[in-house]
Length: 258
Image 1 (cartoon, helix red, strand yellow):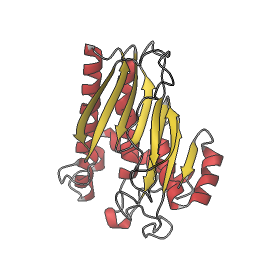
Image 2 (cartoon, rainbow, N blue to C red):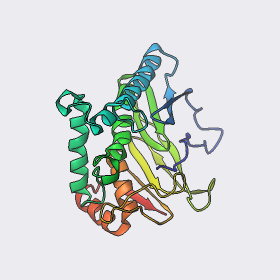
Image 3 (tube, rainbow, N blue to C red):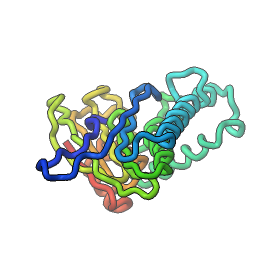
């Protein structure tokens, strides 16, 4: 669960600097949480409105396929044996293969195999995967920089013929809610945070089958939100083993452990 704050543009150091570019923000309730799209640059255009609409449509479709809260989702129907895997949407196979890769790369610190969840729960990977794919629609819009925030997990980037500009991201101290422990600039790529401050002991340790019973958080950022999200979970489960696996397999990512 991410506890990173909503991104905000850096504050100008002096009145002599260039004025901030125009900005727009959009919010939609989807996948059980508020998701926001922040855009800077040429923001008043049909292309922006259409791309944001595509973001919402994509995420709602993912919710209908993978939600564990909707009895009619394909994932729940697969668990109950009401839907044959061969008849399920192809995204299920894509996500299942990504979960296997994540388990291998993290040395088993991340897994989608949970006995108490019908034997399979990919939702720890689905959000990062879905938000990253949804944000790609914004990359087709000329003249903008964008940041998509899904409960504090972020994707930043730029549209066609655009120069990406950084978004300032605050990382909340899980022991002192409302207090920023650190901040960083995210220009392109993804950032994710895992911890127990917001949702309690909800992160399982695949090695023991029980919940991780410690406070704190782990934030990971790098080229992909999907893998930042996976690694944030792995490092929260075991910061020492997780950091070793991260350095071995994905050295382009950075981490901040609280």
